[in-house]
Image (tube, rainbow, N blue to C red):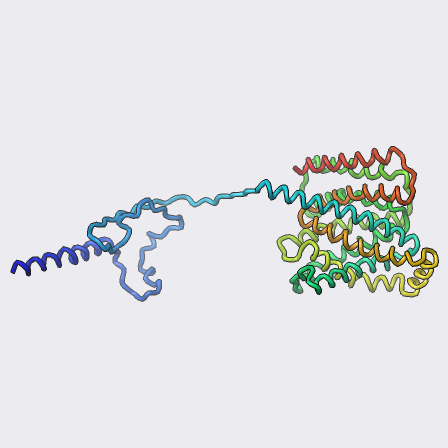
Length: 391
């Protein structure tokens, strides 16, 4: 009898109390299948879009394993805010600046070599449409070999990529041919004096066509850059309308090419070296029929015979060097453009022209005057002012 009473009491304490407690804590929700349709019966007044912060985990479970556990659940609503964290490590910044500096140094050195051989070729073989085509053909061949031998990973492209690349290739083709035509008519330094206005074109195009605003010091810094380049080669000035027009057209075309290229490379899988390789291939397809129509194989054959008779076998080396270095300097320049803005790229182009002008004066024996050094110093000062204005 006593034993029976104890069993009944034990059963009441362990089962009945827990059942009553569960009924108090558990909401009146009908049991359904394991899917989440049970949520349809929950009062929507309990729902909130704001996060719940749990301040205590006591009494959180509905069914406790032990009667000694007690649970209390407290919650409050808090505003959800996004934390914007932008951390740049000093080491990464230093590495990035060093990489860009190396790109600029290689870009400028390769461009000097290209301009020297380009002018030698054009002096002996005044057919700029063919030399422009050969430059693109040599670069395209170099990249096809690099992709085939897996020296460089081939880009993954689709039809949309080539469609977006088409206007860039048109601008690149126009700028390339216009610059070559200019150099075939005038001295190297004259073409580069006109082309030193590229940053000004870049600012004007970005301002009036793309709506980009720049602080006043950026505009003012362009004056000593352009003026300094003009002074650095004033002793070799010779005016020719075709040479002048070609350089001006090249300026405008390359500004559009740089802006469109930067947009095309931004956030895309194809950029830098491979982007220019694809650009070179497409430009070659655009230019080849025009080069044949304007000059043609008959003029090229006659010009090649005259060049070989005048220069000898070295002319073939000059032609190969001109084509190879054209691609290399553009390839490195696009690796730079992938890291910087189009305006900074244009200023880098202007600084490059100082080296080209000085080199052409030395190689082609142009008389040197103190004004050349003064002009280079002014241009360097303008570039420094520009960099401070951007900061």
